[in-house]
Length: 313
Image 1 (cartoon, helix red, strand yellow):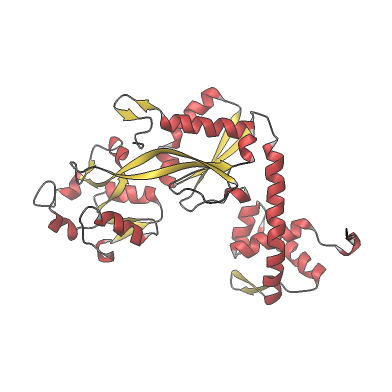
Image 2 (cartoon, one colour):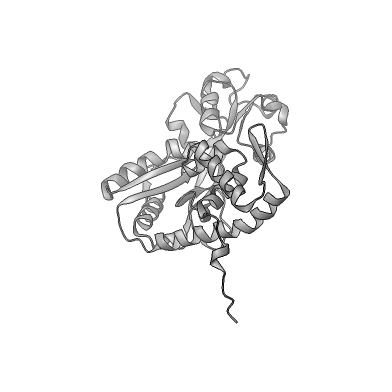
């Protein structure tokens, strides 16, 4: 039996619900305002208006952070499905768009965004000049289902059933160091004993995964070997170029600086998978389909002696 909805009792504004949801997920007004493209005062007024409409307090304000009250936590459980539904509606509408003009957002690591994507963008501009690209350079995995990006380049395969993923050629990586740093060692290449006492640059937050990769080379090192590190791979690359230590980076970066060389030149590189991902419904969007297919083609074709970008094996 179909139950009739009493629409007159539903008085809240969706924009206020969206403001609450994003603020609850981001934790601060400033972060939520950036995510929504609003000013903090506007966002604050929307949350206050929702609290007044519902007659409850949703957040406790502790310094700059906003902590959900018990009622706020209960409301969040109800509005999250509303946010997901709004995202699906947007995806469905985008999936029917057939224009080859407009913006496509691509998310990738900061290193890939800075050193890999520019050559693709030049090619895209020649083929589809009506398409503009917004690059989201983040080392965390953006949520395609929430429309944080249209296309993602990542080293992990997505598990969500609504996402389409295509595997690109693997990235080859080696331990690299500046010649100035390697000159400190007695032998060339350095012995394992020397390298166990060397300085390394930590890239990202996965310390255990990084140590496991290093141990594949026979190294027995620990956190004490990492005096420097950053979540930004670009920062780590500059630290390496400055001769502050060694780290695991894509082999093709040696083309960008002849003073950076492999630490183990005779050893085979470590390979990392790369996945090109988009949402299943967005894959029917013509401009996103064009960018997706051109990305796949660009990073799969070979040039004499080296891959298209210098990164891929």
